[in-house]
Length: 468
Image (tube, rainbow, N blue to C red; front, side, top):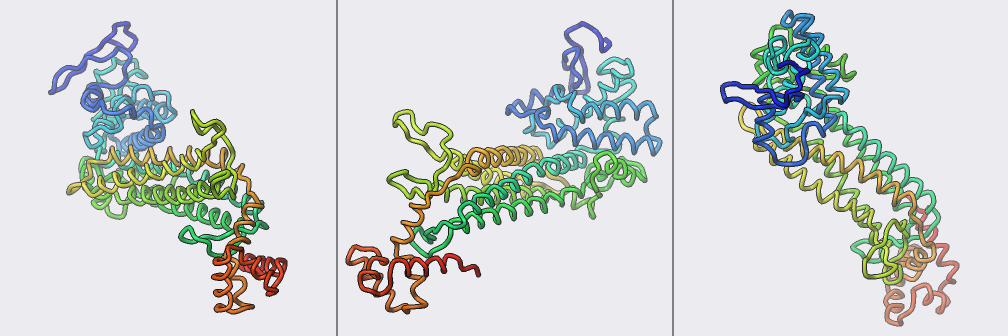
């Protein structure tokens, strides 16, 4: 049956028996079994654009290297490369049907890629799908490779290509926070420790700290991503390179660098590269650290915007939706709450990645699919969540100057500003007396002729402006 047949099915078989396939399906028997055995989630390989592209790039480089070494004819190379280019560009995604969480240690995923490339190459040559008389999934597309080296190599390339979007969103968020810092730079603010009144500061200083944090988070993620360019490709099954020809490793990296534009290199030790997935652990950990750090910042915003009457009410967050189906007019801090939830999820995702890395056995780790699934989700959640948080919340935050200054000037936190002039013991006694009399410290100072409210405020302004 040729590729243009109108019959609804074609059959493929191997030593495990026959499988019936649709006439237009570019995948084959190994993919079909993977679909049957691992119908687990709604996340298929075709939904993972970066991963599919990375796989296509690895197969493309392999075809070029194999032809260079005389292992593929020029015709075989050309049709495999064209199929890889189409796969990289996204036109074959509908045929990438294996569940991302497949339990075969990546074999079903690798064979899905091999079969689609082989069958598309067969089409390009005018040959029948599934006969593999000109291009075979294993003999030609997978030549000089194993699932064990190509899957983690593609995964590293995919994650590396996805991280810049998160890094960019973090840096844009830092810019937005800098903007809020400038807007709030002259607003006196009550600094709190352990949720108790502590010292005078400027509200802008709090947001300066947030911006600094976010830029550091972006840099740390970028650093972890740079380590993903040392690949196990060329190690084949366990790091020995058995099944590839002399010169293959050098050739495949030369072509992969040209195809990707990246400075990919073989790992310094091929056995280490096959046995260990610690590079993914570092990426996952940095993503988790970023998410939980943003969650802390979001929780601060939830606290400071609480109210508007019965809470702190020093910040006013943009009202983006109704907060209750029963309480009219209630508006909740939904965007910071969303960021907190993303932090919870990434803690769980990182725990899964850590467990999967530890569970690798001997020469390979066969739990790469769950690592891929969790890291891909972490990246997507961070990219989208940070953007929405910036656009729908941070860019529109407004401060209540009156609430910020009232909370500071009515508190005993201004005592810190008085110590250099009046001494610790004297100020401590005045704080206790103000509490006992039920008045503010600033009022007690003025009532007892120690200093006027204007003088006290001037001292507080000086302390709030102090930068170490």
